[in-house]
Length: 371
Image (cartoon, rainbow, N blue to C red; front, side, top):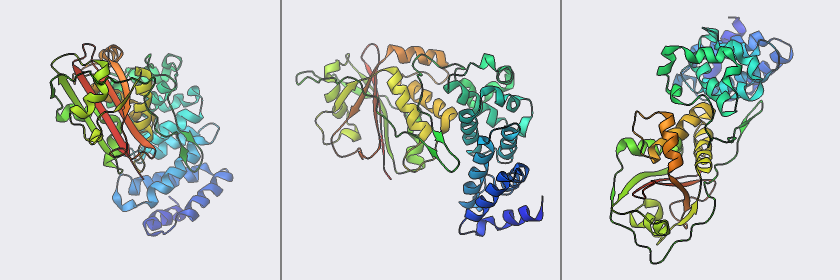
């Protein structure tokens, strides 16, 4: 490590502004000195990776260095990005790197990142596999990725539960737009399609709440970071009905079961939806995050969306993705909203319902966030 880089690393937590460090790295890149940028990123990761003592300065600089390396065309830059990630493999850096690389490079150009020991990071290729899948890449056409996935011990990784191809309801997902200084994305969309008129005479059958801590966490997986890292509120619940719940009774059923998000409203506005629209809304919510929460990006955003789907259809904890998908397609799906009150109605609102094929189980996911 050069003394210049060592000095930057030592002094980083004391800086009031990191502009000078970022501009220095940009000059290095412009002069063809990418190795110096990589050396700085590795040194910073080793000194501050996963530690609070790096303060805000560390991620601000490290994310910029990663963007420079990941988005620069040409041989060797993806491998340099992997080295930087390997120095801090425990945070969000692998997720961001995988999103940057998958969005800016041909799949064939990423083959080296799946070689055993490449970059020293297992998390980066695990995320990269799913970033490629959500973009519709056929892993069979990328032998190094297919071989990497096939290693038996990698089946223990959380992302290994996900299918290695997009399912029928996983249409083109809303993915971020990465440039050098920032990542842009669309705001969370709703899951609505056609309006579902309620009936003034449709009755709501007797009901009991079946939500448990585990099922509530599963249902709310796609919006977990809206509450943990931002200002959001989430209501994730499930109910069992003594008789099949008629579709016409849905608008009245939501306040009848005592949902916080419908308090003060005699009925909710319910709209028909589809597995594809619901998956997209859940993926968008998870992958892009709330008003202040960090993004899950494509890999873990996809996992969170599938976990929410599994919770909403009541799939058991050990259910495979294939079983979850079958249940998802058998359920009826709806979007919903209410008047002013619980929902902030700024940009981050989500209301989703899943009704079982026999009409006796209703799962609800409502989420709202504000800046």
